[in-house]
Image (cartoon, rainbow, N blue to C red; front, side, top):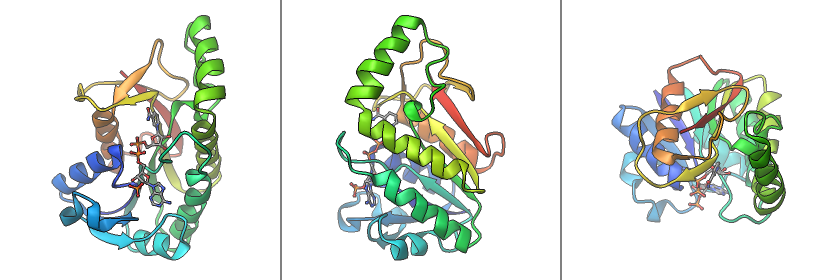
Length: 212
Ligand SMILES: NC(=O)c1ccc[n+]([C@@H]2O[C@H](COP(=O)([O-])OP(=O)(O)OC[C@H]3O[C@@H](n4cnc5c(N)ncnc54)[C@H](OP(=O)(O)O)[C@@H]3O)[C@@H](O)[C@H]2O)c1
């Protein structure tokens, strides 16, 4: 398939790039710095920013599926998803590309903690979502709002904390809330799950939690 990939140079994006290439897909990646992207030989690079509607449209052109692992480079207010996701949705509508699979985050929806014990709900809600991760969570809520109103065939994959370690090849998936005592999952496993959604309609039009 022809894949349009946003955030290819990020920690999860690099894993997605490698997996898409190994699966035989053709990858077009929007990159701010294609010259320093270690996997540049595996992709057709569109140089530019996800805030540039022309570069976004060039990336999406002729794609069968859009994948995004976009995110801010800090915990400060950067509005990456607030600005980029509406541009991606607009480009997809204009070019009649329907399928998009994005990396989200567990804080994107208010039901995230419904299956956690009360103490953990309080800690995560007050010490993490409302303080440390205030801006990333706001961005993910914006991404969810944009996608769920898009009319596209979207899937938002919502992990808790991401780790750099080896994947386990197994995970818990729940459309209603983070599974009980969910706390982390490796980016490798999230990338594998996102890849599986390319050929699956199981979670189309849904945001789905994933965790070890
Ligand atoms: N860290 C966690 O524990 C955690 C947990 C749950 C969910 N998440 C979510 O996962 C997502 C990605 O996480 P990650 O750690 O894999 O990513 P990351 O390493 O932070 O990479 C972010 C990617 O977004 C790209 N990007 C940012 N602004 C851009 C712009 N204006 N134009 C083009 N590309 C842009 C970056 O490109 P450059 O290389 O050019 O900067 C990079 O490729 C985030 O949305 C985050 O909220 C994270």
